[in-house]
Amino acid sequence: MTENQLTPDLRTRLYTSMVLTRKFEENIVTLSQEPRRLPGMQILANGQEAVATGIVSALEPADVIISNHRSHGHLLARGADLNSLMAEIMAKATGVNGGKAGTLHLSVPDLNILMTSTVVGAGPPLAVGAAFAQQYKRSTDITVVFFGDGAAAEGSVHEAMNLAGVWKLPLLFVCENNCWAGAQRPEEHCATPHIFQRAEGYNMPGRSVDGNDVEAVYNLGVELVAHCRSGKGPAFMEALTYRMRGHGEQDHQHYVDPAELEIWSARCPIRRYRQKLLDDNVLTEARIRAIDQDAETRVAAAVAFGDESPYSGVETALTDVFVQPPSA
Image 1 (cartoon, helix red, strand yellow):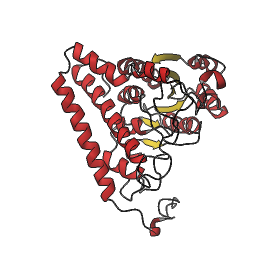
Image 2 (cartoon, one colour):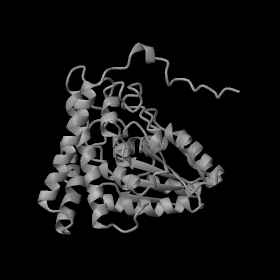
Image 3 (cartoon, one colour):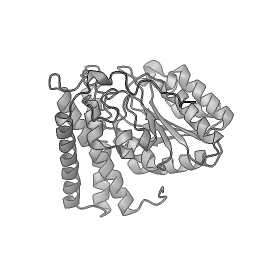
Image 4 (cartoon, helix red, strand yellow):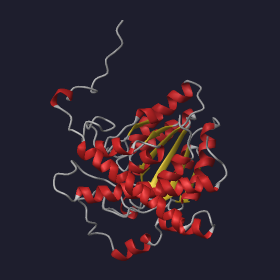
């Protein structure tokens, strides 16, 4: 059950979740630099851990998550199995999707993470469908869809927002504004510096939040999730954060001013929260080292699990591709 109070236990879990995501993705950076180690394009959310952890922690287990190509933090915050997730990224048979999805099309239906998509703007229309099903069944569950500032200008996103507003669907739109859409700055592709204000045009509440402050994200998440769950319709959150790495690991950010990276590095959500928890006597230096070490150990074990796992055989090429209708 979602906690409305930021207890010491909850604050420790928020920190632990962000550290695990950071360690997981740092290992993917290393692996992606080794020839033929990881297939395909690796797209990471280094620097955006507070958004994933804050929002997902404000949800109930039955709530549905629709993610995008920068999804690892969303899945890990939800509790996806570390070994199976790493194996999937390695395209191994023991992966969450049998090695067929890779990093860009992950799904974990058992955790109500229905899909991720590398198609920019593809998630919101599908989230409308999930939210409609919840409303049709008179469920109190909601759907959350994550997308970036680049996707926010896609027609599919606006159509989804409009329909969610018309039908009063239990759907929370979360725009992770990380200051870059591919290699484009916001002013190059977005007519407004305040994307959340677009929510007013679709008759839903829209709010912005410091996306590098996990407690601020969590608190606003609890508020907007409650709005969606109450039957009042959708809501919109713009989380202001920063993408610390390139669009993908092949992108070396030659277009980014190093001074800008230094400014945002100083706003690192994990470093900021670590100091806050120390100042508030929630954690000690020893406890922080233990959390860091545990995350490193778990991620190393996941890499070893992936390395030891086999690739899917050719005989599996057509399995899990088509749904077999129930026999009459």
